[in-house]
Length: 517
Image (cartoon, rainbow, N blue to C red):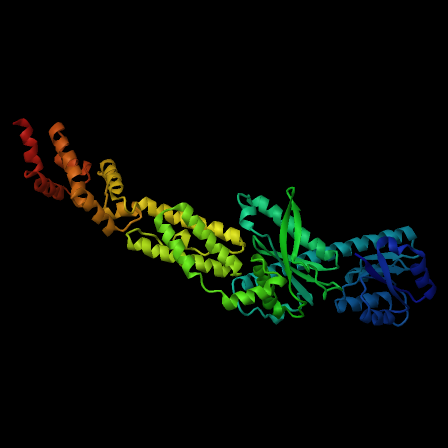
């Protein structure tokens, strides 16, 4: 970091000697000018950026201490080193009062002067670095907030009080990895952090090579933004092909990179966000500049794929996986050829799933609409046709599994399975609704098919199993009747007695007495 120093002394020859004979370039110092009094120094400081002042004390009009006092009063950030031919305690005391960095006695040893200036420069640079780091953290935090608001659909991001914080003008750069779901599958959190670091470094290196300063934020695992500013070439496109590659873990990973036109106000950040995200969405469907006309044509002639929608639904209920796979492929081929945006494509998929859901419900299969197969797709993760098709296929297979587990058309298997559960769990509170939940069918439909297959209602069948078990315990044990009732699943003793008598024609105690006859 280059620093600028002002030399102040009422003797021009001393100013020239300090300026010309010492190797200031070795300390990365540029001489901002010379002044022969404190007043001249103030005039220069009004016009020039100065980081360090090397000043004599004794001067006409305004001496070095008065200059230091004035700068302290107006809170000028320049650091001060004073030179004096007098070793007086009062001078040193006042110098400390005005935050003078060092106080050297003439004649000054050149090596000592260079060491002193170097030490002060280190302090300045460390403070600037810390200040810059804090400001960058503040800007990153605020930029992340603003972009997250844009990402979440907040309409008004205009905040004039933030304008002074953010350097202007700027370009907004957005980047994403195609088919991110495939790349990130099975990644640990640490691997994702490493990917993000390499990704950010790749884009920043390109920009910094063109003179940009950058502020980087991720608002999503697969959506990275850079606020780029400070470049003389701000008007020129950095990524004209909207593409670059990232070398990571021995592979070349493609990156889509889109950029906004130069922006002159923070109030336009929302528009810049929408521009670059829309560009990314167009890249996701292969719609670069050469295919924009195709999209316009597609909008004019392509219709909703109603026939393909019907084909998918019909093959789903035929339970032919290969035919269903083919129908799904034809659907996505149509969406791709007609340049449906991924968001539009997913809406088609959702509508098909709703139609399937309605038919499943009609035949008695219960599907909870709150389950995962009815949630929105994260289109920043599933950001290609292939990725979206994989997700859609997985959800169709989930619905197939639910349908198969309900065994529509295979009622006997269902009832046999339920009988097994009854014999295993009859001692518990085994309601028909509980069994229906396990089968993903409605209680009414379950009751219907159970009676159809067994000739008995579910509750009568359950009572029969319990009563037969109770009869065995009454014959073969001396357990109390109340304990037997509890053992076979009746919490209410009187209810058990009533059911037993209704089923067997005698009460439990009368039945037990028969074993002695």
